[in-house]
Amino acid sequence: MNIFDVIGPVMVGPSSSHTAGAVKIGNVCLKLMGEKIQKADILLHGSFLATGKGHGTDKALVAGLLGFSVDDSRIPDSFRIAQESGLSYRFGAIDLGEDAHPNSVRMDLTSISGKKLEVQASSIGGGRIMVNRIDGLEANFSGDLPTLIVHNLDQPGHVAEVTSMLEHKSVNIATMQLYRSGRGGHAVMVIECDQEIPREALKWLEHLEGIEKVTYYSLQQEI
Amino acid sequence: MYDSLEKILEICNKQKLSFWEAVMQEDCREEGISPDDSREKMHAIYQAMRESDRNYDPALISSSGLSGTDAEKMRQSRLNGQLLQDDFTGKVMERALRVAESNACMKRIVAAPTAGSCGVMPAVLLTIREKLDLPDEKMEEALYTASGIGGVIAQRACLAGAEGGCQAEIGSASAMAAGAAVYLMGGTEEAIIHSCAMALSALLGLVCDPVAGLVEVPCVKRNVTGAVNAVCAAEMALAGIRSRIPPDQVIDAMKSVGRCMATDLRETGRGGLAATPEGQRIRDRLIGGS
Image 1: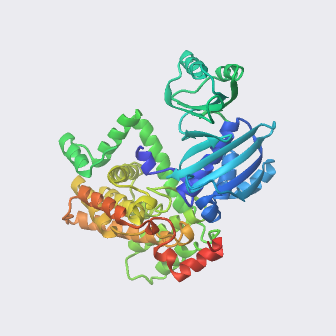
Image 2: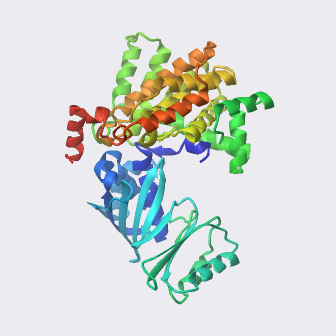
């Protein structure tokens, strides 16, 4: 936290958690996809479902998927702008269970080239967010740092492959988490980094045996 | 960020710094940025704050239908000379409504410290600027003063209604605005921290009870309360009045009061005004019963 978290952010109202946080979730989803989104099924949970409409959470999520920032005065018009730019969206309700944060959403997304991505995220207060799941597997990160998400088979050696690649590219690891569906099943690594990871390094990772999917969240990328 | 107002005061006295300088220097050190970069950022925040006041649209109504047009009513009353209070206080009230209503209507605001309390700081500071014709630099220094105060409250207690009730949002905004106002009026560092203590003391125990869970009722009007309260606390501090309870201890009291509050009274929309028959009727109309 710094003094600009106390005075700030500059944002479109009315609520830092229901509006600004929702824009940021949409934004993180777009960056995780890495290209424009064509179709979005947006499922609201808890307080997002109950009070989302009055807070403009729906408009804010769509605005985020369009790449708007939290202070973009076009946020209230995001539905119209989505229609004009070929993003189709549908809202629904979902119960993500008692463990899910009250301000949670699950987005089932399809990009213009047909790539699929499923993200569950929550808005945890003051405009800060947490991504909770990606493609059905646990993955906790804040969207404040460049983040690498690697889905792989649960076999020996994949963590070493990824971390030695990061060392080779002089990328420092800030946090690292490992999850798996079960022994020998599907596993996921979530690595928050202090530096951006070069594109070619990500391409190299994608082609390794046993690596199923590489998703990268960059702070710099413009889509 | 500092975690004690009294510590900031001590540093100011020892190093012959203004309150705002101490706050800025510490933030620059922690974040690894230069004072020039920091000031540029604060300049942008200040401009956004001015715009949030200027961009008020008196015709706008929030999507729930609960907020809008009240700042214009206040303005008319003031212009028609119907207020008991002086023009300055009338303007403070009007501005608090302008910015808080704009927030409810999805306009751009500066969360200070939160979106729900965004009207307090601009109401107090921009009205003082208008009266005294102060330059931007001075206003930005007042914002550093306020952010230092908010930072201490965040460290010792909290700034979120869900955690500490409305005292943590409007109460903190009021304490920040009071300290900044004292700075703009040329008060001492000691007067700054005592104005915070008095502003926060006055709002201790304020619950967060938004009708239908929306940042509208009673949030918009509580911005007026927070702003006028800040002016009162600043005037008292400038007159030499001191808080009997030391400022840091007042903040600690706010934290413990927040802990005592039932969850129904902490932004859940289940207690206080939200639980009144009319509050529930509004909720049922907007969301459907549950």
